[in-house]
Image 1 (tube, rainbow, N blue to C red):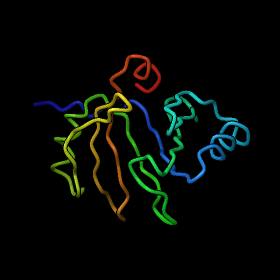
Image 2 (image 1 turned 135 degrees about the horizontal axis):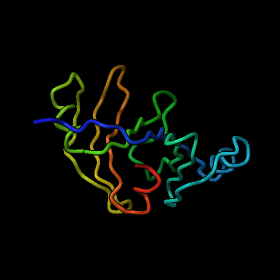
Image 3 (image 1 turned 60 degrees about the vertical axis):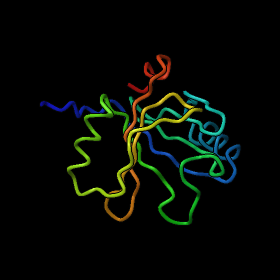
Length: 133
């Protein structure tokens, strides 16, 4: 079976105790455009299909920590194919494919070198797919 391992875009998530301050920084200091506001998570366009996301650390997948407090997310064409591929890799702590009731996505997580967490996701809402895929 041929796998579809195409990567459509990239989002780097950073976790903040003060999301309002982070939003002001990304929009006013870095002059990044807010392209998706999910309330407790905001996504800003960086260049092309690369994005940075700011998350309220009290509601996100991870908590803000002094070190390694980011989640590296890859938006992929086929979450299922990537899941199959990652299960044969050296990555650990591989979760099952799931979703979030607040955000329409298919996703799974895995741990890579130095304990960094990676997420492989696909947006399922058409408006979000137009932005990220």
